[in-house]
Length: 152
Image (cartoon, rainbow, N blue to C red; front, side):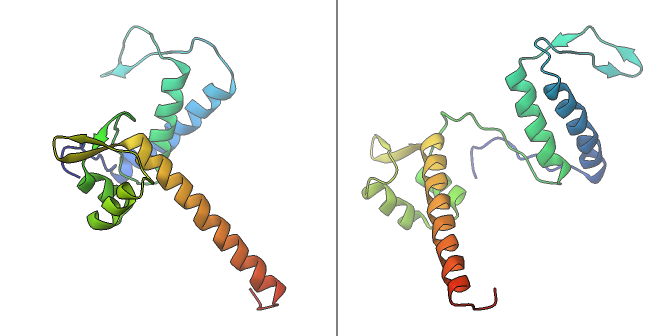
């Protein structure tokens, strides 16, 4: 997506390091320590301790968990506004279909001149609702298949 932050895809060595780091951060978060401090080390030299908010540690753990699986990462603030092209790419739908979602008021938007802008948080909320609807339909199909003894 254009104008989005760079996507970082980890190497195998970085994924391995991320797996180790996730375990350490998970242990730290489970300890319920209120003011955790870290020391970074570079070239054998220890830096002064730094404190991080627990919410930042949770986000860092989630980032590292994705990297540990070899997934690429890009960070975008939730209040970011997207073009219709960016949002349609994010949802993996065509731009005309995405615009129809806006016209049907399924996703809020604002006009910037003649251009529509949507908030990332609203696009992700729609995606979450859509995913829930799909899961519900899938569960209904599974239940029907079991009732009909279709063997799966």
